[in-house]
Length: 225
Image 1 (cartoon, rainbow, N blue to C red):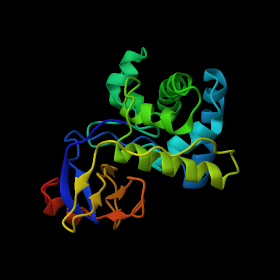
Image 2 (tube, rainbow, N blue to C red):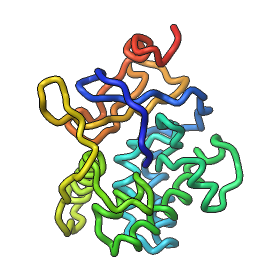
Image 3 (cartoon, rainbow, N blue to C red):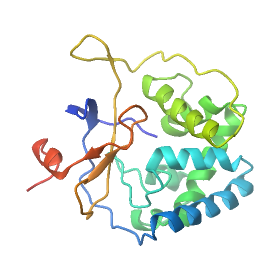
Image 4 (cartoon, rainbow, N blue to C red):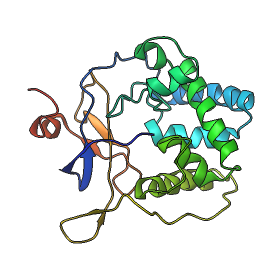
């Protein structure tokens, strides 16, 4: 949803610095039952805000992979990766931990997404561009186009009618070492997590979901040993 500071070199992408403060890890149900719960909340909020549930679900999947403990590089929180400042603008009063709770996170994320849906005239790509870049943005960056492609792909996979064209980006190009276009990425980190993967690549593209180990983050100076 927001622009991130970046550094080069992890898993073939340019990844951003991770926010320094750790987000307390909210309770997490088993993956399958958790996703069903989050989608159930999403359906209720989609109905309340008059936006197709499928759009809400696609954004939730692309933003966090249904991980309520996801924390973005500049402080985006939870399933919908909403910024605390955005939630505050919508009337939220509370801590980041409170904002990470699924029912709260989905409620504020859906409210912001629904307004983008209305402002865009119900165009899928423009909706998700405004969700990630801000309601006032009118241009498509490389990342916004890739984001749109990921959302459209998910919608098509579940049988939702995908209409409109994918726009061409007008800014946000980064020249890679080979002279080609390199797309900025972002990293999602679950603080306090265990296992081989300390984080996952959530930048839409061929590396989506790729493992980022603790060793890589330590090497880049993002974590202390």
